[in-house]
Image (cartoon, helix red, strand yellow):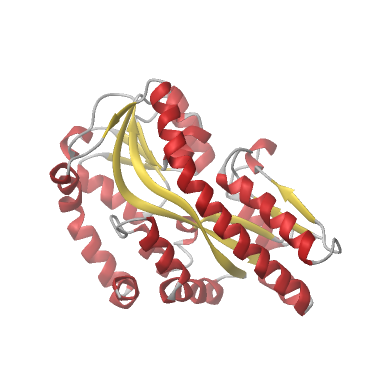
Length: 302
């Protein structure tokens, strides 16, 4: 039995990929190994972060999770939280599947009890808010912006003149719904999944951060399996990664159309307007390169 968990609704690319993983494991083991899927831990009234704790404690064998939540334990993962790091999805996927991703995996496995099996896509993050059109950093003055707990994210928002409010996902959703924060930054998939569009009527397509979700397994559990089962899981992960990334790319277009139909106003930035968001965070990027090592950034650039 393989027990794997997630934190997304049934129609998400992530839940779809969990299904592909489960089917693949069953097929490759001739039905000998079953997969138990916990599709969305939020439905159980638990915070998303509980998934990582459950895998580490052995209550689950595997989960996917945003890499940013492990940045305090694995400093190298914070490189992924650098603003405007990748020029597009293909560049991001190539880096994560190559030497850069291998370096992140090695660092994570050296500092935690997780085995890292690969990286799913969580798209590029954009700004949404309930107050007004945002076309320049100055438009964010005084806005309280919910974000993932991460020092680079906070520094980015401060550089733009906004007020960062770093909180865990479950609390963040509550704050958005209650109007305790004015804005958030997330990929469109999350904006739909968490019902943000019911509160926020403006979406600025900044694409300022790329989101990766690692596939994490309990290292001791994985090591206890026979070689054939480990190979089956690895092959299933490869299938699931390809599927998840493909579906996520398609759904990005679908989510934008859905949000527009619900009355969300999209602000597409001109190159100069986007540059106005890039320029203020140059110091944040420089500090990140110095703190986390230029070598990791060079692996991306090469």
